[in-house]
Each structure stands twice: as C-alpha cells, then as structure tokens.
Length: 109
Image (cartoon, rainbow, N blue to C red; front, side, top):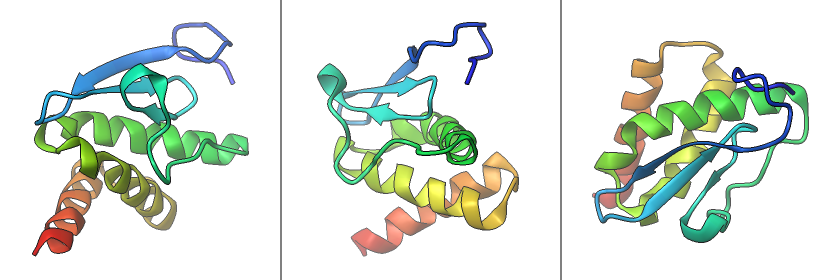
C-alpha cells in the first residue's frame, strides 16, 4: 500500500513522546513501536489491506493521545483504538479517542 507521501516502502511517519518521556514511533503501515523500534506488547501488524487501513486510523488516534499516556498504557490504547475502529467503522476520531481514554481510566480504578 502506498503512503500519502508517495513511498510504497514501510517507513516512519511520525513519533511522539509519552507522559513519562518515552518515544513512540508510528509507521506507514499502521504499526506502532516503542523505543529502538521494538514492537509494543500485544500489538501486532496488519495482515490485510482492510486491517492496514484500520490500524492506520487507530495509530493516528493514539498519536493524538500519546502525550497524555504513560508508556505502559500505549499498547492497550492501540488495541482498544483498533477494536473501536473495527466495531464503529468511521466514527469521529474524537469519539474513539474519548472511548480509548475512558477504557484506560476504567483499568486503573
């Protein structure tokens, strides 16, 4: 799948810092990795074109939220965002982002 920049190879498209100052990298195929490019625990890569689109949407939602999260929460946020993107289709990013944050709040109560 070709990236919006025109490159067909998988490449880094953005990175953000978590609340505890760890680097999280976002890739053109929807993969989200931690420091040094290591995969986040429990977060795999897409197997089909549809799941790649879902993963990309979820990754950008998490990219907007990652500054509010500790690194230990990022994997759960990605998994939750992917599930919500799959269930709710193309609901607004804000609605999915709020649901991701709500689900993380429930885990810490």
